[in-house]
Image 1: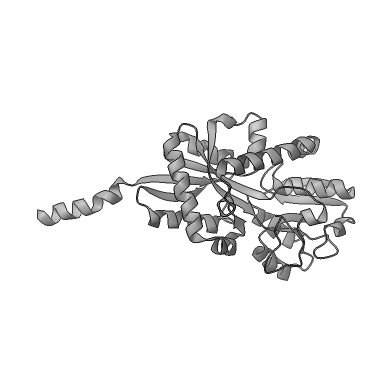
Image 2: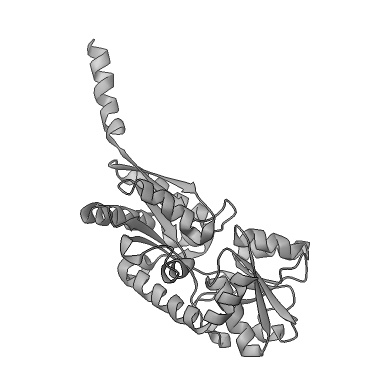
Length: 306
C-alpha cells in the first residue's frame, strides 16, 4: 500500500501538467519547424506547469490552424504568417479575437530563381518573361517579394499555391513551372546540385549570411519588403495572465536554445534576441505587410481569380 501511494504521489506532478498544443499552418517540409520544435522541447524541460506539443495544420492560408485553436482556446495556440493580414482584411478572421504570445521571428532565407542569369543579382531577372512564384499564401512575403521585383524591372508575376515553400522548390528543381521562391539556404544548396539553373539572388532579411557574406540582401538591392515571419498567437479567450506566462516561458526557452542553434536549424531570428517584445514585433510586421498588400491589392486580387 505504501509503495502504491508513493508511486501515485510521484506521478501527480506529471498528471497535473496542462498540455498546450501549438498549431502550425505549415506542412512537414517547412524550414522553421525544426527550430521551433527545439524551443518547445526546451520549454518542457525548463518548467513543469505546461507540456508543449506542436501539430501541423496546413491549409487555407493559416485559417485551419486558427480554427483548430479556437475550438479549445484555453489550451491551444496557433502560428501565423503574413497571410494573417489577408484573413483580417477579407473578414475571414477578426483581429481583435487574437493576441500575440511569442515571436518566432524573421526568416533569413535565400531568394532563388531558375531564370536569373547571375548569382547574387536580383537585376539579372530582367530577362524573365514572367516571375512564377510558388508559396503558401496570397499576399505573403514570397508573393510580395515577387511583385516588388516585377514592378522594379517591368515584369509580370503569377502565383501558384503550394502546401510549403519546400514543395515549390521541388517543383522548380524539376522545371515544372515555378521559377521563383524563398527557402532556407541549406535547402537551396541541395537543389542547386539537382538543377544548376537554380540561383540564389538575394537574402530575404536585412542581414547577410555569415557563411555566404557576398550574397547581398534584398534591401541592399533596392527591394523593400519584409522578411518571412512567424508569430505564436492565442485566442482572446485565453486569460491574459496565462497568455503572458506562456509567452515568458517560450521567450526564455528561445534564449536557452540560443540564436546560433536556431539559425543552424531554421535561419530564424526571434525578436527576443533584439529586446523587442512580441506585441511590438507583431505591430511592426502587420503594418508593413498591410501597406504592401494595399499597394499590390489589384495584383493580389487577380492572383486569387486565376
